Every structure is written in C-alpha cells, then in structure tokens.
Length: 182
View (cartoon, rainbow, N blue to C red):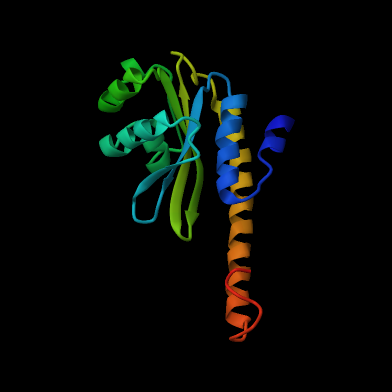
C-alpha cells in the first residue's frame, strides 16, 4: 500500500491519470493493461491514459455497443467484474471483440463522479488470463479510493492554476509586462 500511495502522489491531471493506470498494471494481481474512461456532461465517453494502444479499440467497442465492464462502471455501476468474458452473457457483442484481442477477463471500477461539470470516470482493468479479478473486491476498491484521492488533488491543483491564469489576465493592465503566456 505504501508503494501504491507513493506512485499516486498527484501531479498534473494527465500525468496523474497515467500514473493511476501504470500503477494498476504494476500492483493489481492479474492486470496486464489499464485505461480510464471518462463520461462527459454531454454523455460522450472518452478513453485516457491507456497503457497499450489496443485499449482504444476495445474501449471504443464498449462505447459503441453500450456494454462491457468499463462502459457499465463509467455509466451505471460502481464495480463490474467479468472474470471470464467468453462466457459472460451480459456482454455478448463486446466479449467477442475482447476475446479476439486476447482479453479473457476484465473489471471496471468507478473512480469519480463530479457534479460540476457533471462527469463520471472509471478505471478499466484488462487481463489475458481467465479468472482474473474474481476476488478483487477489497484490493480493487482500496486502489480505486487511493486513485480517486490523487485524482481529486490533481483536479484541485489544475483548477487553482486555471484560476490564477484567469486572475492574472483580468488584473493585468493593457500593455503590462504580464501576458497570457505567464
């Protein structure tokens, strides 16, 4: 847990997302790949911080079919596990795509839900091994909690930086040495 906390010390928002997915692959048993799905206020789903380019296609398939552990964790459920995708009746169209790509098990864990602007995000975990994630409830939720804390902190830092930029631009007299580049 100490190693997890160190790896998730917040930095800028994009870097924090990348550290969350990299730490998931390193720390969570059976996890070979990870990404983060964000559901924006307009309902659009977007993938961030994927640990392998293949995940962009897998996540896109979930968004298109509106099924899969990651889709459900970003839109409906807080925690969705499929330890054997090939035999999971909940995701018939998506499972065929995932299995063809070599993914045998998958989990989606809600990371955040924000009211302003409304958004939801989920950590997506992928495994090449059947049976992965079948007993992740405690470790997975603890990881999600630690990740959410780092993410909240990174968002707060990002918002403060943006506020400072705006304040400097508004308060700067025209022709001042303070410019939009500072």
